[in-house]
Length: 451
Image (cartoon, rainbow, N blue to C red; front, side, top):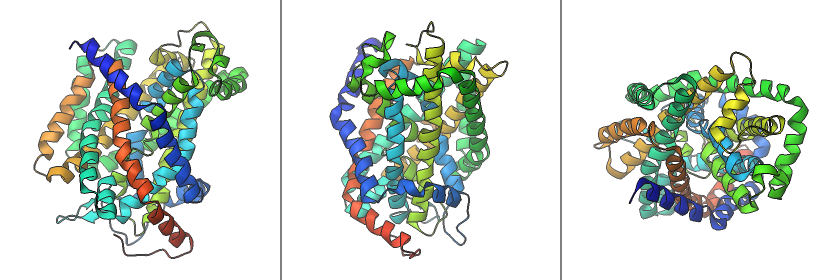
């Protein structure tokens, strides 16, 4: 098969996977857990406070904020910038609303994932805390075979969403902005990532704790500035996003050919790619958090989706759609070009800010997903193959820098959907446990024996 044939096959498989059944399963799980757990979204302010408060005397490998920062590092990436732009380019402005709704409802799912990760986590002989959907499937449900399937999908998915997509976005930006050849960008990224990955979860958490808040703040400030520049079009953009989410023809122009299915598909897929609620990746690092209670960590974990999608993706979407309205002559069929055009409206620092945002977001995602992939491999075979996995992971960073973007994105969509299925099954099957734990914590009974 030629590369074109492979890309076409992957794209078709992703389209089939992300049909109505997957959309119903994902959004249905978000909605069901929201209702069953009595709207954990209402505790978001309390959760934010807990995320920066130490749980004294708790066991774990990293602080709760360190675990949150690592989770955010893996989720705040190209999905927030290029991913949202791609959703708009392919599904129209209405995709922004579907992406945002995935985030709002996904808070409940991210909460549930964090709770099960801590409740069913285990401590290894060397003192390391391990957890995630594979342990919930095995220890909570006795479904070892499905746990193995999840880990295989996670280990493979890390090569899509985790590194090749990220390095591809960085190399593309560096080539278009500064004329740097993708090969050199890939070599630098692979070298830097390899050095940090050698230090394990503590090294990754230290890096993310230091850089994630800074990079997110700078990006948000940049978005707010652009919205001020496009101030006359912001309300119009907001109305267009809402209307075209359910009546795509309202978008007009180049978006007139989109359908509700396309709009929802790209919005939800990019929402999952961005916040990973329901995918089962974030709970792997949540299990390493220093906490005495699974519900406390669940609340902290839920803030990741809030910051990632409800705030950052929403700002990105408004920036892009308002820029389309303000500058209708721009080729908005190219997501990357659309993003670049929007940020160039910031005098002097616009292009460097976008470069800094994509590079730091994407690089931190590479680090976070290296941890997810390693824990999946460790579950499957212990520590003996970790060094081989790390070498392959770093090599894939280099390869991703020179691969065609459409191939990488289509593969990421396919792997994300496959990985989410066993995790969503575990969340639904353990909904009774989730409900009981939540009631117990909210009633004031904070300490229990885990697992």
